[in-house]
Length: 115
Length: 110
Image 1 (cartoon, each protein chain N blue to C red):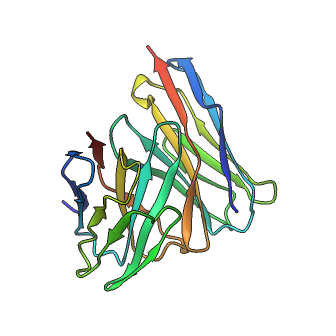
Image 2: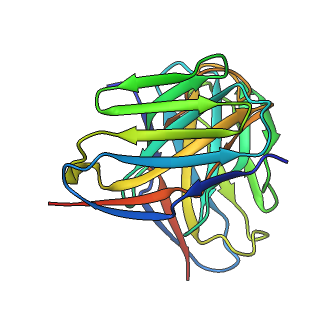
């Protein structure tokens, strides 16, 4: 089956720890994205990547880091610098870039809770 | 800065009713507009994508319209079913990114 997988589904972190969220896609898409969703708010863009070894900051990149070493993978690290990391994190991919005409396909999400 | 607003925030209807969800955006310079569905605790599923040059798109019981000049889109759901219960999000694609509304939470009761 083609699609986007995210792991883990639930993640608990102690304050001061870095954690990495996994996102993998087998759709052969060039562009990948990370969003954060908080209750009562729309999705906000954290980082996006249009091509391997390149990525751009979104609206709320502070406290997060990403890498894009392979086309299929776009892991997100939530660092201890992120002051309010508890949220639902969604990964997406699209054939074209974010300013293009292609729809974005979303993974099932990871719910991160800071204890 | 693009802002996307969805009204109402929540909607409850009996099964079988036709309903309309609204989405408005402040900057008409968009490439396309998308409607997504999100079930509780799940990711988003794309329902319809309307290119900026199009006026509407249809898929089954769903019809989405786009009026770029007035900054509005509507999602029409015909003959609603309990399985339609979910949060519906609209998003506009501008330069370099997708901007989402906060969603309309729909409950269709049997």
